[in-house]
Image (cartoon, rainbow, N blue to C red; front, top):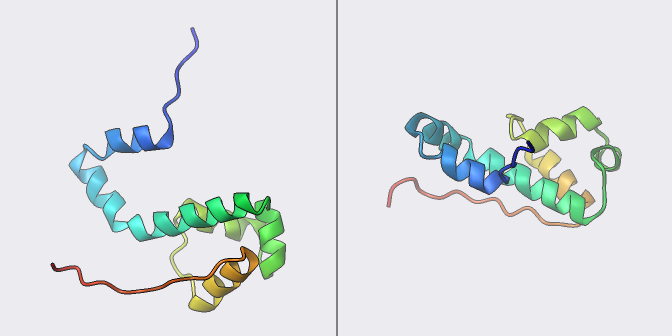
Amino acid sequence: MKLKTKDFDSLLKTQLKDKKFKSEYEALSNEFTLAKEIIKLRKKRHLTQKDLAEKIGTSQPAIARIESGNYKNLSLSFINRLAEALDAEPIIHLKSKSA
């Protein structure tokens, strides 16, 4: 019997019903958002992780860490290099946590 696979959004929706998971996910939401944007732009430009790494002078494992959403210390300089290589522009802003 062949198992059905769920797409990411469907799986995420299910996982977000768990309060602990939701809290942890929300704490990392900015990292995940940036990671998804980088992956989307890289694929749109038909670049591999290795291609992107070479364009910005880093390693493929560094790009993999960034795309995993677990890369903690990205500098603005590095984000600007990523954006340039992906023919994009970074938009960085702060918003209040309170209403």
